[in-house]
Length: 383
Ligand SMILES: *Cc1c(COP(=O)(O)O)cnc(C)c1O
Image (cartoon, rainbow, N blue to C red; front, side, top):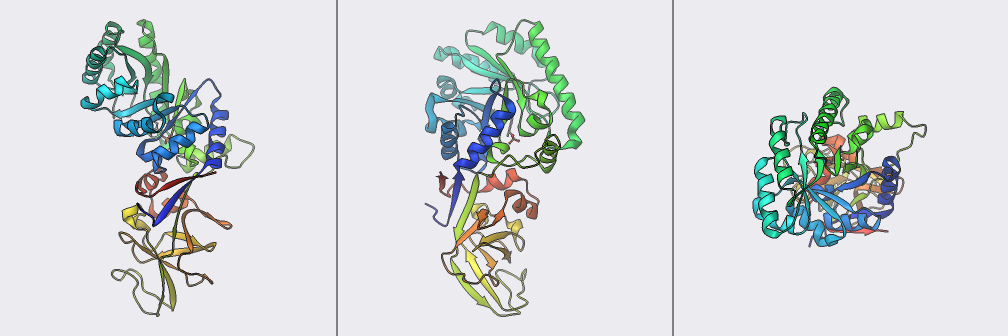
């Protein structure tokens, strides 16, 4: 087991986020907690257990492996919805355990029907329709036969949801495109209704859409990034603040990533630090080595740029990020010693390294940075 670093999940911060989201959406809308990508790096098993403790009973995942991870933690106490891939060989497990899933092609629809019939169960399907993202989803031309299959196979196909996904609701430059999608989605819904087939629910919103386009909330919202205490983009945050009198951020970062100093070294002026020549010491320096590198998800693009906190002071990464180590400049930190705590993301004394500032350095999105954090790092819930 990896003991070089630790991920802490702050339960209070999570509660703050969930309270905010529930207040924003009201209790008629189901909040689905999106936990794909190892719960955005937070650790899926630990995260869903914590979320369940705060009343979250609906989880969305990408594939069956993730569905199994949620199921292992919470069994049938919660609803699990697979938004992406269900392989044929996993279909029996999925239908047998009442796992819900997106269906976006006819092969899968007929496969689901066959397996459900064999198991004498109903497959709980969410029909995903194409509205303009051009990724997955039934085309308009498919709808007639989808409708016919759903009607004919009612015994084995439960039309739980009609859904779609927006193409970049977090960026205002996509405003027109998303509005067009919203309109198209409504037309498709009307098409089903006028043909006497209504889904139990409609859903389309991710975090960004739920804030910028409130009409996309419908019956269920699929919320990933915001429940972790981060905004989908600065634009969404700004747009949220503009609509409020109170200009404070209602979200709190749930994740903290910590390590400890592995060794300390004094360097003479004029020496290169680490591999190659990317960092030349221009003075006498004190360098601390931290046992975290790109193998653990600390991006190489943070070479010579990333910052960490040691004894409440910001320290810059010097030289390149190695596979398992980084070196940081602790020249100005007085009483620094081996085993001192190092904060990679999080707060120490009065300072914070936010995920956003961390990813700004390297032009990564919050999403990408978080999901890169290695699965092998232990996750611990902090009360
Ligand atoms: C990831 C994802 C979401 C959640 O997105 P956030 O921006 O993190 O809220 C919602 N719906 C689908 C289909 C997704 O893939």
